[in-house]
Image 1 (cartoon, rainbow, N blue to C red):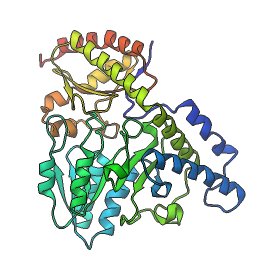
Image 2 (image 1 turned 90 degrees about the vertical axis):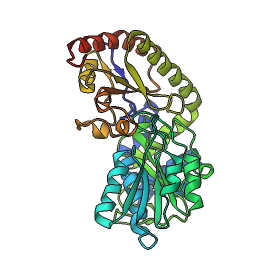
Image 3 (image 1 turned 60 degrees about the vertical axis):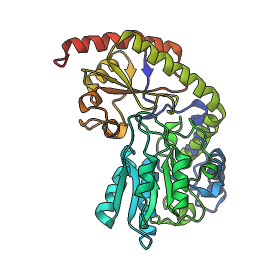
Length: 385
């Protein structure tokens, strides 16, 4: 049976060249990057090389990159770090209703533990935030705006530069979760006006357990990892050298191939969506029709539960998801789709198909042959039809 993986927004396969770059640092070059001897300094050289690659990819200096364990830690670091470091300036943060839980739960934490107020900006039917509401929500005690670059469930890309301008005009830090955007969209933190930016290696064919937070020079941030002077006293903990090396190599490959891959992803997703629309009625695209990640298609199938679709797709070797992998254990409809105004029953029948560089037209055609019969069969069994 053919296997078609369409869940790349959850995680991606490690590229061959990434794995090859990592391998020596598991067994041969195993020194601790904080050690002063030659083996330690060899490891640190590899870390700094990766830092240079990532910094160059986002338009900043290597010194502004702090390595973490992934996007969730980076989001926590940004939200909690800014909150704790700026208590004297204010206790108000602005975010959106469709953020990843790394941001939403961090905001909830500082509400409960630090007495912050959090304003959650609504979005329109495409998942784009209301800039006027954002402007109106700014207060004298606002210390941070945190709005994601591109949504992980529907792929909608936010007006990042406009958001950054609002933050800058009001003397507020701006953080964006760019976990899904790195390697898929051009990110120039200087040109866009970003102060803090979260990344994760495993979303762009790098290893799990490696991530980064861009911290612009002059940003006042309290580290919440204690236990050493690592990362210039900003993030304590022994560096994951193999993971960081792999992260750098993955970014290098993704940046080089981005134009070609995006063009191919757009072609594949359009072929996929057009094919489904020809075979099925009452299916609905969620997210912006144009301003979205080229690899992401989120579709609501009316009258069917998403979990039933996922299980039946899997029986045919097709891997997809009902939304964020971090909320896969929840029976509640997607908070992203609900915020976009999708009816709960329709949101429950929504599937995210996220493509990767290894997918082919043959994969799409296989899915178009298998998915419509599954949908039709489940609808015949549904009491909602």
